Image 1 (cartoon, rainbow, N blue to C red):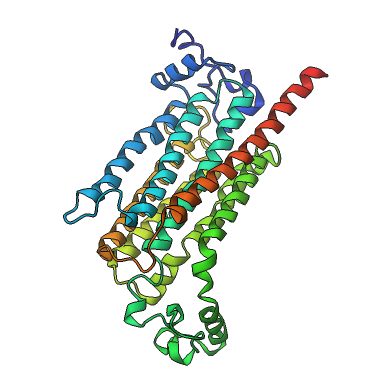
Image 2 (image 1 turned 180 degrees about the vertical axis):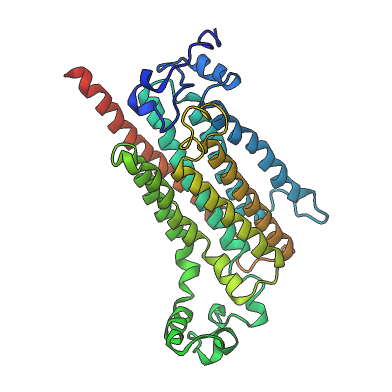
Length: 363
């Protein structure tokens, strides 16, 4: 029964407009597929098969490289608090990969289920960005490996006030005169990083989720541009510790290499998601394999993999010493609270979609 519709794939003119993708002309599954039919479609060529496998198989690759950290010599126990941020990051990435693959597998069950699948998908992308922010905060914190060397006076809590520009002369000697007031201002508010970095990442993640969910009902013509650009903001905010450590000179030489590759893959994934290349130039030829969303999945995973290598390198360089010890509440507690709020957002949008679907029938 799983394969009874195997040969009955539809063209874009035979499915509801909400299920049709730009420049994808064929390979669509029947609307209102059963759970079993959706499950069976993972093993037959449809336009969602590649979308499913590119993230489902990536889950196991990521898990392998993640667990590799605990095979190192002198590695701390798996449940050591020093790894709480790392496991929070693991939860974020695995949630993204699992939900993304499941969303593409089961989105043809109904139009309401389709919308809910992608609402949850956007939520897990946001959870991933917050998981990254927790790992960055504890392992790539500007205080890490630098404060003890005296190169970041503004992070020294023993001081009664922020340093002046003169005290930071090794960092700003190259700056033009007009830029010095901005540098001085930054040094005086640097302590806000400790208090606001993670909360800001959480707030932005929630706003981005709402914007992406809303894009499925409004601005359909620009939905891919909106969804791509909306997640550019959390990337910039979350990456602030990396930018700063590269600015002052990171001790770990691999940080810049992996972060550059991370940015490169993200940029390429955005290009694929917005441009719809290659199917834009040859509609119908890439309906099953090789269309832009599959390349988008591949590039986003490669960016995550380089990010993972970057974080692992920083953890190894710390040798078990963190400037600020993580706690269960400051890591898993943050992720749990975020997931609860994201769930509320998804339910709210799901109720709206369900009401919209029922309204035409009632009329």
